[in-house]
Amino acid sequence: MSEGKGLLLVFMTAIVSGASLFANNFAVKGFNNPFVFTFLKNAVVAAFLLSIILLLREWPSIKGLSRKQVGKLATIGLVGGSIPFLLFFYGLKLTTAINAGFIHKTLFLWASLFAFFFLKEKTNHGFVAAAILLLAGNFLLFSISSFALPEILVLAATLFWALEASLSKNVLKELSGSVVAFGRMFFGSIFILAFLAFTGQVHGIAEITQGQWLWVILTSLFLLAYVLTWYSGLKHLPVHKATATLLLAQPVTALLSITFLGEELSAEQCIGLLLVIAGVFLSLGYGFLLQNAKSKGLSIAANRN
Image (cartoon, rainbow, N blue to C red; front, side, top):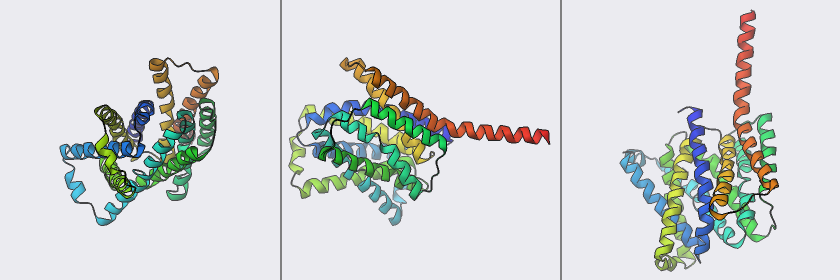
């Protein structure tokens, strides 16, 4: 698969993420226990992914996993599929969606740093300029009102997810996106269930109402689409480009809020959205433009010779 197709998949991830954030803001408020909600959603996605793997006849890939590969998938499940989910949704219940949104959207910055240190990914001057645009746009979109324990929990979750991007990128060199996605959600669900058992909250699973189950299924479908497109796209993209592209979720969430909630964007927020869109396309396009310019320069020099 070319980098272009990888970009297309991550663009799809961003669209799904924007819709998912819009839905989750309603869903998590309807649960007294955000940990139970998180477990059920992740477990349902793991079951969906297992069904997809069986339908696509990828089960031999699961059976053929070495102990080392299983350990890597379990690590991804811990770092990306359990701890940050618990931290994020607990923090989201205690803080505003605006505060959580601002902090979560800095993920691309932390992910780029982790990728630089662990994967030796190099960025260029264009990406630095894009990062400035993205941070400025994020600041204009989300006027964070406080930074206390709930915001610290969301930041911790964001750092875990940023680290997981590098871990997953490394594992994707040898495994398919669907297998990595299943490993993340399967082991993540086990770790969250262990947390519920240890803290005496398992009984909350049996107390879920029919209406709450509808929210679980709806948000699970969004999460399923997210992990399938994300890991398949990340397999063919550098971490810094993939995570920067995810910021396109912001315009999607804004459009849904305007359409269904009647919200109005201020002039400041409109400028923020434009900066985010410009930053994403600069982060993606600068490298291609530079490469094309160099190739054209080489061909011109060759013709002169």
